[in-house]
Image (cartoon, rainbow, N blue to C red; front, top):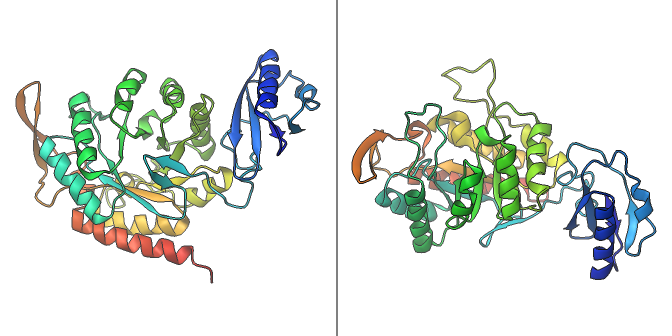
Length: 359
C-alpha cells in the first residue's frame, strides 16, 4: 500500500502506477475523505516495494500480504478505525450515509401488474430502492427460475414509473452486460458468494454491487469475496448479512440463523456499508420485523425486504414463451404486505435515529 502525499499530482500518480506495473503488479487508486492511497494488487511476497518510497508524490510505503486489503478498514487511513463508512451511490440513493435505506419488492418477478403494483406500494411505504428477481437461483431445477429478460423489462418499467432504482440478482457472468442495461445495482446471492468469475465480472462493470454473505461463510471469506470485486476496480460494494445455516436449525426458528453480531463485527473490519436481509434469514413473516429492528440497532445501514401485494396468495400466474402458467409464489411465507412494510419502515427509522442521537 502506498500512501500518497496531499499535494500529489495526476502525473506523479501515473508515474508511480507505471513503476508498479514494471514490478509485475497492478494498482488501484483509492481516494478517501482525507487521504489517497495506491493499493497494490498481486503477490507482493518477493517484491521490494520500498523502491517506490523515493518517488515524487509518495508519502509512505507499507508492504501488505493480507487476504483482503482493498476493503480493509485497517489498511485505509482515509477511513481508519473511527467508524467512517464509504458511501455507495445507487442512482442517487446513498447507502452508508446518515440515512437508513429500505429496499423492498418481490423476491421473484412474475407479471407486469404484480411488479408495477408492488413498486408503487413499496415507494408509498417508504422504500427507496426496489428489489426484484428476474433470474432466480432455486434449489430444485424444476422450480420457477425467473422470466429473464422479460422480467428485467418489467423492472425497468416500474423504475420509470416510480423513480425507484432497481437491484436485481445476476447469476451468470454471461448475463452481467444484459442485467446492467436494466438495473442500477447487481445482487450477488448467497449461493454465488464464492462464484469468483461472477465476482470478477461484476467488478469490471463498475456498477454498484450488493454482496450477500454465503450462508456458511466466515467474515474473512465474505470480505475476500468483496475483495474479488474490488480487485477489478469496483469499490461500489454493499455487504448484506442474510443468515447462516447451522446444526441447530429448526422449523420453529426460521430458515437460517441471522448472525446479528456479524454486523458490528464486519463494520470493524471494513469501511464498506452493511445492510441486512431479515426476510431470507427468517423465512417467516412474524420474525421479519423483530430481526430487522435488531439489525438496525446493531448498526446496519439499510434493510432489504420481500414484499407482496395485499391480494397475493400462495399461487401466482405468469406467462412464459406465450403460455399462461401457475406456480407457487416464491418465498410467500416471508413477504410483508405494504402495510406491514410501512409499519416496519417507521419503526426502523425511529430505532436508527435513537441509535445515532448523541446522549
